[in-house]
Image (tube, rainbow, N blue to C red):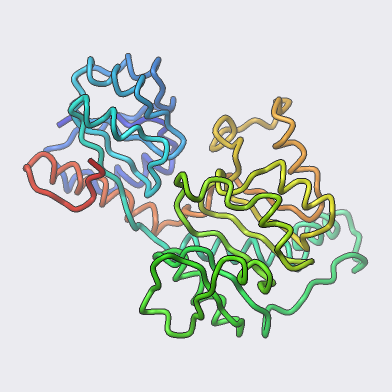
Length: 328
């Protein structure tokens, strides 16, 4: 079976090529351009395509893929809010994903963002490079003894909870389904979490019920001087309201690996471009905000797990075996 990869970066190719000999039944074709209705029309002789969180897997794209003979969409990621599953089912296209490749990788990045904004590491790094060794404006706070609020305690949220617990933090959480493995976590209602947490870290999926869950109302319920971290999905946070909260000095710091307008920027080198989206530019202008480019997953271990699970999914489909990673 031939698989066409969209949006394939050098690290994707290296990771998949490292193990492809274990899958002689599969032929891998890599395209750097990402998936869209236009690029989908270029697919030839591929029964499967492989897409990512940045890809356009809309109804329009899926219709084109169906016309090109594609029967399988392999998502090399956990998230699938960019996939029209109803249309995929209607067009007879199976969609599979990688549900858990390395929750620790994402959780560690979340804590790295929290630590960086707390201790102003981005400022300190730039200062010292300019021979400025002043400590003015670099004061942070101890995480030890503070309260960490984890929103969503699936695999990634649970990993973040354990990290916070290791820092000596009191860990509280909000989730519709309590994780029985987290015996050190106290589950509370969302309003209580917002009001009492010194660090709030978002680890829930993007759904209709969670879209813009961080908005002007929920921000106003937060403790003054809170640190907010989002490594989940940009749509969880209403960016204009977040900016208003930053301007009102509600936040000690904000760490974002995802944000609402990331689609045109994520994984692309735009250092010579003028950003046309004022919201993104405004976020980048604040001294207490750190934005990274959806890189929380990017470790050797995670890439290896993504590659293996993706190709295992392809083999399961090829052999008519249910893998448990199907989305439709």
